[in-house]
Image (cartoon, rainbow, N blue to C red; front, side, top):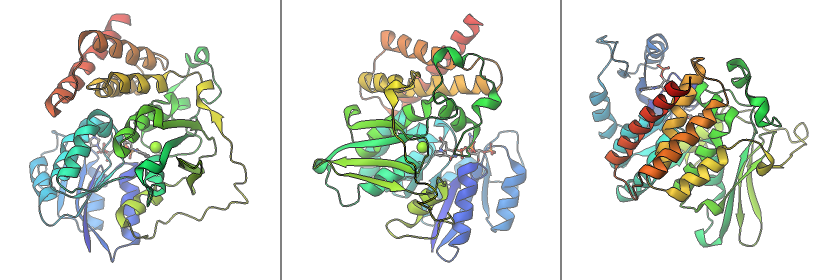
Amino acid sequence: MKNVVILGSTGSIGKSTIEVIEANKDDFFIAGLVAKSNEKLLTEQAEKFNVKNVCLTDQNSKNEKFISESKMEDLIVGDQVDIVVAAISGVVGLKTILKAVKAGKRVLIANKEPLVAAGEILMREAEKYNSEIIPIDSEHCAIHQCLQNIDKKDLSKVIITCSGGPFLGKKQKDLKEISIEDALNHPVWKMGNKNLIDSATLMNKALEIIEAKWLFNLSSEEIDVIIHPQSIIHSMIETTDHSILAVLSEPDMKICIAYGLGYPNKIKSLSKPLNLIENNLLEFIDINQIDFPSIKFARDALVSGGIMPAVMNAANEIAVERFINNEIKFDLIFDIIEHVMEKFDIEESIIDPTLDQIINADEKARLTSVKYINNIQ
Ligand code: NDP
Ligand code: MG
């Protein structure tokens, strides 16, 4: 029996994780649940699965049925817990993930922002403390699976697939009058709002390039992105003999969650099987023909290195939050990220930053983003 703590249990990935655990209940037990403010659902989950250790991080909730964040961290680093599922949205999950890594736990990471901001530190500490980081972001999960039994020297590149999001085919000038409802309307995946907006701007792919860099120790040149509108191939690797290995499945995150929980064994995922006859069209389009600047932001952030991925991520988090609150227009998201990255490139460059320097850069980039928005509105 493996004991699992779910960070972000009330979200899209969190709820799917609970379903997968329920389908494999002889092998997995929910030891702890964490959410921010959805008290109702968190309480229901805790009652249904008889979970004693439940944490609601929102400061407003002082209900005694919940434990504090520090008690939850004690549980995570203690002997009772085997697996931590990181499914909070945003860089805010970083410190807890790092604690789990330093305690040598298996950490299933859906939560890509901490890997973008501090991937080098997380991977270094995972190696040091013997923690298994298993990506459950679908692309990285597919690459992880393709890389089984492949020597690093035999890998020529990874190819991350991208659905193209709801605005595939649109030009930048068409992006001005996009509504929140349009942007949240993803053609394939059902996800939390932050991830949906990131998929619409393609910032999701920008984050995923940097995520792949750290997870698999790659250079920017070894990471390709290709548009694949059907989202049946979840990503690929190319080996030096020019074979391509791919993972195909229904677009269902429960497969990735089951992969991470069961690895290296297979457990029930609850996904329906992929019908290849019904899905007999697999298209690929060059991402460079797409009129969105996001991929360039990621490449630039990797060239600059240091704190720049954290800066890019922070500017994006602020911009997305403002767009969802109906405070800025869609295409301003790109302007904000560009402005903040330029400002940091000129004013600061920190190579090999510490965790504190990353957290400071994140906070400063948020303030710079807000200042920029206030100045131009
Ligand atoms: P959701 O917005 O659906 O859920 C976020 C979860 O995190 C909720 O449980 C929320 O609690 C909790 N949360 C947010 N802030 C805090 C906080 N400060 N402290 C504690 N809990 C917090 O997000 P998703 O499930 O869609 O995404 C989660 C992560 O996984 C993201 O990083 C995303 O990029 C990544 N991901 C998601 C995919 C998907 O298909 N959904 C696919 C690939 C990656 P509450 O409900 O109380 O607000
Ligand atoms: Mg993904």
